Every structure is written in C-alpha cells, then in structure tokens.
Length: 456
Image (cartoon, helix red, strand yellow):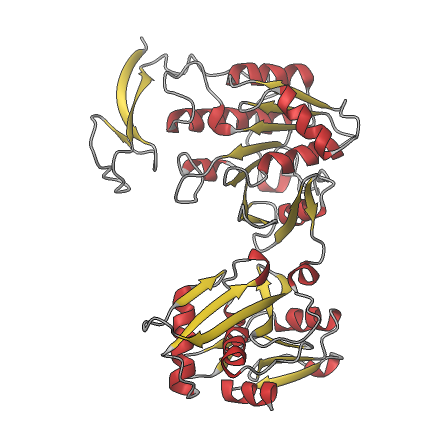
C-alpha cells in the first residue's frame, strides 16, 4: 500500500532530511530546505509515466555493439554547431543555461525557424504561443509551418504532444516550469526538476529524439536545481554575456559528444543574434591615430584564438590612496603584475591610479594576456605609443620572466592572418619552428627585453 511521507529537501544541493533545519548540513547553505511530500511503499512507482517503447533493451556483448557514426542534426547556426561538436546527436539531452534576458530563448527559436527540413515541437511554460509568434516575426520572415508551438507546463501532456506529433526535435522552455502531477511539490523544486528531467530523458532515448532544455541559473551563476540535473543530461551549455554589451559567448561545460574547449560568439541585435565568424576583427579598435595605453594581446578562449585590445590608464592619484580598477581582467592578478613592474622592472607605480579595460566587454582569464597588460600600463605611464602592427602574448612570472604559453602556433597564425607585422612571444617555447611564419616573431625571456623592443 502506497503511503505519503513529508520530507525536507535542500533546494541548493538536493539533500533530503526528515525534519526542517535552518542550515543544510550537506552544503552549508541557510534557509534552503523546503517541505515536500513523497510517496513510499510498494506502489510508489505506480504513478510513473508510461511511455510507448518499441522494444526493451537487451544486454549485448561489447563485440556486438554497433559503433556506426550517427549522423548529427545540423542546427544551421555555425557557432552552435562548433560548440556542440558538429550538431545535435539524435537521442541526446542538451541543457542550455544563462542569465535572464541573455538570449537563450532567442537562440533556440532562431535555430527552430531555420530547420526547415525538421519537424520541431516548441514547448513553452513561460510564454504563450502568441508571444513566441511575435518574436519569431521579429527574428525572421520565413514560413514556420514546420515548427509547432504549445504553451504547456504539465509533463504528462508534453509527452502526449510528443507522441502525437512525433517531432524530430523537442525544445522545452524551461525545465523549471515543468510539473509532474504525481508530485505535490511546486514547479521548480528539486523533486520536480529531477523527476521531469528523468522522464524526458527516457522519452528522448526511446524515441531517438534530441531534446533541448532551457534552464535558469541562481544568484551564484550556476544552474538552478539539483546538481544531479547536470549529471543526467548529455550536454551542458552556458550562455554568457553582459546585458550592457552586445557580445554573447556560448561555451560547453559538459559534452559527451565533443570537446568542451570550443566557444561560440554571438552579437545581439534588434533582429536577434548574429554569429561572429571572426571575433578578432570585431574586438580590435580602429583608431585614426595611434594612442598610448593600448596593446593588442593574442589570447585563447578554449582552443579558439583571437586578438583583443587591452586599454590601460595610469595617472597620478588625486586623493592620496591609489585606485586599482579592472574591467574584464582579474583585479588580483592586476595587482600582482603591478608589483612585478615595480620590484623587477623598476617602474614606480605605487602612487599612480591604474585603470584597466578589455575592449568589447569581454572577460579573459588567459594568462597569456599578462604581457599585453603590463605593456599597456607602461605605455600609458610613459605616454609612449606601442606600434599598432605589433601584438603580444606571454605569461609574466613573479621574477619578471616571460613564461611559455599553450597553443602558441595558433596565436601566431591568428596575428599573421589579421595583417600584424610582429608578435612578441616567450623565448623558451619548445618544439615550435617560428621560421615557417611570414610574421616577424620576437622571442623575449624578460619583460625588460620586451619593453626595449616596444619602446626603443
């Protein structure tokens, strides 16, 4: 006989407790336990959603398992294909997360409108079909007879729609709004998200249909719901960006079918998201005259190289205590580089305000940007211009040495492709033949050598 039991579930980590506590003993968060009713007993699985399977799976020896290459579904968006590893894999479950208003729904709707040859089911629990139609008219003027819209939050009804329409792709916006009727907890709770995701996964695997889930994020920036959600799905994509800037970055946090080192870059317009095929040209400023305090860095995001403009301003502190401000670059690393400049290179910056900015609103964590950062600061401090046809790459150590960086050949190739005449690189890059490049490669071991080349 099935019985109901009240438990308390942490909304941050998913841990279950028999009674309420102010602090979750599993993750340490306060006031995250909510009351939920669970079904126990022999018949607790009677409410499980039945899906019409064509046949039960049988255990097979390894030698009998087919390893044929499964054709992927082209999303018709090159940057999205790049991050996914070539397209959507049939039967896969993809989770797309990001901040509110970043463009998650816009991205998946653009993809749905471009897939003319596929039948698509778009299930929205946040917007009505009329609202989605208005956005579709703004994004594209194409006929969308292949895309079926439904406003639904019931998991049972969603599976019925999948059975009736038999689509080639299912989009659910969002997983936090889905609700299973057998559970008494509210939509968005740990139990609802976990059960709904598992049921959708079962349908996707049995029918061999790719399912794209849109997920919310919490105030810490991680995906809302239990951590098991990220373990269940096959691919986790993160859509990042600043609402103040027009650039968006799509990166893979988890990918069972490809690399997690690729990123996709988009530009937000009134007509939707536009792919940025060559980000280097978009991130480099075009100045009519050469200015001090600007250096070009050959950076790497994942395995994708691009050139970015580093801007610095060093001025006398007006209020006694020097300010250190950084946008798009780690402030603690900036303070470390300033200490290296003062201790190892002899530049007195203790009484100077230093402001650093990565142009384009990008946030970089590549240590190879260090050399461009210190060069731009010195350029602003001495008011000397770095020639605009020179770019830099290299990690700066605490002793003032320029340390080797990864994928140096890709960085040099990107600089050569964009017409740069010289690039400053670390000297001790092993196994690299720089003579094959047409660009002039300047190898330096200390920051003093780099400064001598830049400002001589």
